[in-house]
Image 1 (tube, rainbow over the protein chains, first blue to last red):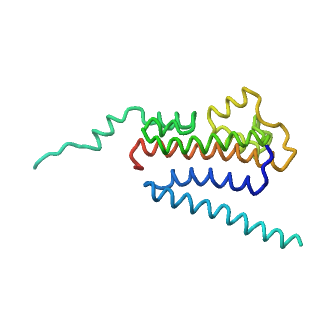
Image 2 (image 1 turned 135 degrees about the vertical axis):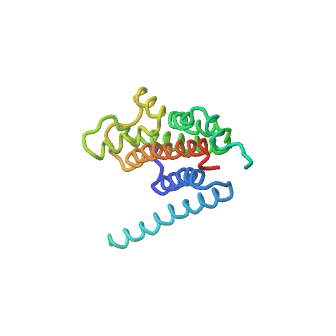
Image 3 (image 1 turned 90 degrees about the vertical axis):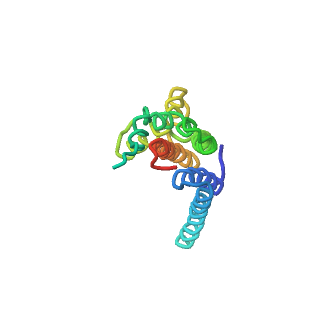
Amino acid sequence: MHPSHFLAVLLFALFASTVFGITMRDTPPKMFRYGAYCFVLFVGSVIVFSWVMFLIAR
Amino acid sequence: MATTPNKPAAAKTSQGFVYLPLIAGWLIPGAGHFLLRKWIRGTLLAVSIIAMFALGLAMQGKLYTSAQDILDMLGVAGDLGGGLLYFLSRAAGWGGTPVQTTVADYGTKFIVVAGLLNIIAAVDAHNLRTGRKS
């Protein structure tokens, strides 16, 4: 299996955020919100750092 | 002075073996939550952790088997968090040996992180069992 780098990031973020959401909060609505927050942070930080590395490498 | 029954003490004595969800959750992802009848949480945890571990293997990620240096030791510790998934995979000879591609390196990280997430899930099951979390 050879997923693209971005697909690998999306899968990693999805599974890690699911576990974080369930284990770090008490009620289902809070779990969902925290999981979504972690997912956005994972993917967002990857995009930001990717652009930073792209600009440094130029 | 009126006396009231000591409910926390009574609850404590009726808890039985409180480490069972912790051990079961470590051996089988989600099993700790299943023991506590948290079906949806257990299913989501099991799917997430097993899928992450399986994707790591599918990407030809490496299973750490011996520790040559400190980083290898950390890798073994992370992999061991996978419980039976790790032992079964080692017994079956799954996983790539040397990391030769970037995707295989991602796969190695998927396997390690799946183990670490499984430890977090098992501790969560223990906290539910002891009443620290609802």
